[in-house]
Image (cartoon, rainbow, N blue to C red; front, side, top):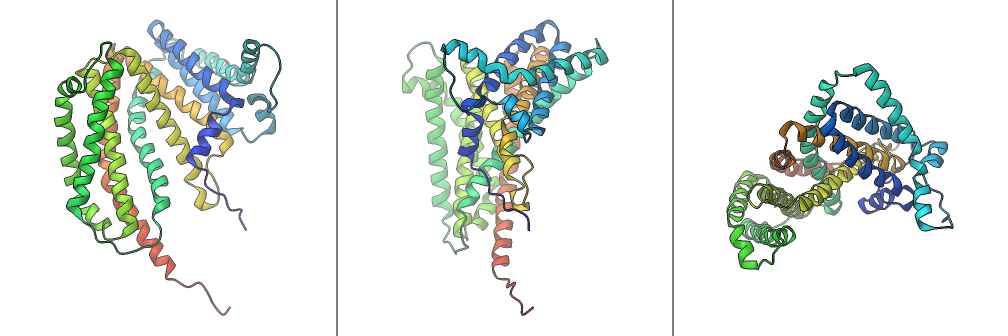
Length: 374
């Protein structure tokens, strides 16, 4: 009989990935990615090779994370060390030695093989940005479905009020749109900005937000009505519509800030860093929970952090390669946000249909008796 594997929660996964014993790896990602971004402007071929090498290096660490030797080499001891704090921080980076050595060896091998013919690798990493933009929507959808599905419960009839539900959805999403206009401009503006001034500058965005939400409500009308007849699915549908539309509104405002409001580079960097973090987190969470019902995980908790770091290097490398192509990172970011919005819009109906189908199968399974005289 196979061992039952319980699903790891999102909060628990975050705690594991941000553990004090592995923080130097996260700091190394930021440091190396920043250096390679600079190198991209000097020699994009070498930069592409190094981004790929560091990504593969942490994939190797992820695949061997079950080894006790690898754990000791890439994880700080539980007991706190004595001595000067600065010295302790520097010494803590010794756990990055193995992945750095693997990355340097891979860099040497790839550079010998490719030499000055690394253009295809530059193009490949640039194309990967399209994949990451789509994956951001897919991983977000997977993470939210995993979370919201826990509250489905047993099937119960429900009296669905379409007009009331739609009105409330509009109020919630457009309230978020108004708030993000104000907060977003306060963060970006060097001068004080009143609420009225923020709304004035964001009027065009509000028009676009309302228009897009009208289209999405029409696009999902049939699925929401069918889900509304069952209490658990109705709650799932309502929550999913709010969360997905808030997600779209955030990305839409990011495009508006970068194209119309000329947001500051610092605020853009912070926002894109957060989005990349969420993308990697949801992707890793999906991999650690997706196969639980089959009795075996595709990715263990120990492999979560190195796998996330490998994704992070690949993501940073794709952005870096496209930055040299477009000569403007803002254009790259806008394209990414647009692709994410388009993907999540097309996933909205399928998500509602999928939940309805899985709920019906669950109800059917509960009516089947497995008792037998034998």
